[in-house]
Length: 98
Image (cartoon, rainbow, N blue to C red; front, side):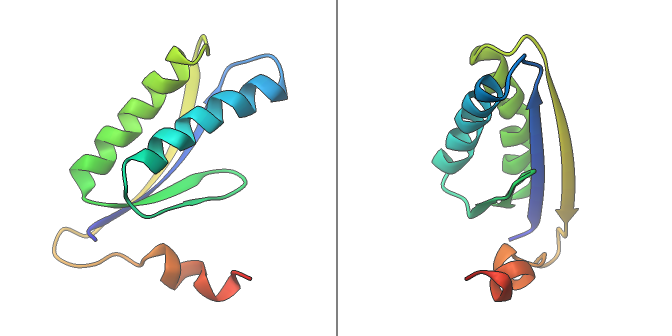
């Protein structure tokens, strides 16, 4: 696995219920891609090939808009190692999971 990307999508909507509904659609899309992922309270992390993950990041914005957000902000963190392996989600937080 050459990349790990964390994305926080923040739809510009008026209430928490609508925000959660739209973010849930974004997370469902990420889950549908078949790569390892982890949902945290502020962001979702996904692991896989760099170019494919960047396409997923791009599509997440489109999904939020199609779900009804008039605008969306995204905060993205990228760990990329083209000639090797980045630290996996499991290696980073596995020991902390109950």
